[in-house]
Image (cartoon, rainbow, N blue to C red; front, side, top):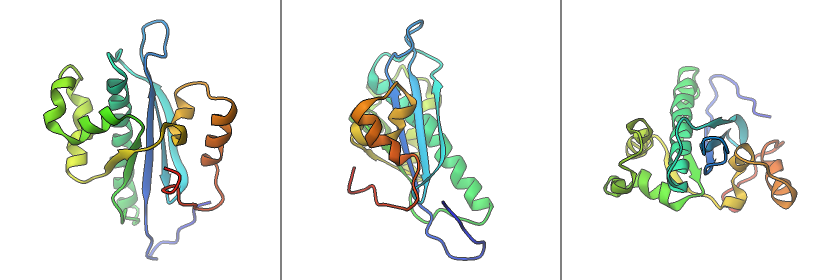
Length: 175
């Protein structure tokens, strides 16, 4: 459980996970975006949403999912600032698709993503501004996977504890 007292100094860490299932919706081939956001190791925001358009590649589907998660990070940073808990460390956005990460970090790489609607390039702009840092997470350790497709067996058992925690273990060693 996260408990904070106003006026005390806090080290505020935001960590976000993003994932997508490419073309998982059968009728129109649209992908589902999934996100999970933690504040100091406690889950504070999560969800899934069917993407508005059909992605032509898994990188595009992941890019759209990451852009939606990035919007949530920027919003949560602003809310925390307004209520007196400024985020003291650069938030981390963890994605399990290397092509998505390259597109977000390198504007020269845009040739492969020209067809992506400009509103999703929000992710690149805010990464460049330092509002968060995008990095890779092993797909088997990405809890956002729980919100994009049916998960069962060993993967479910590995990801489920990431949703409910009683302490703040460091996940950096797991990633």
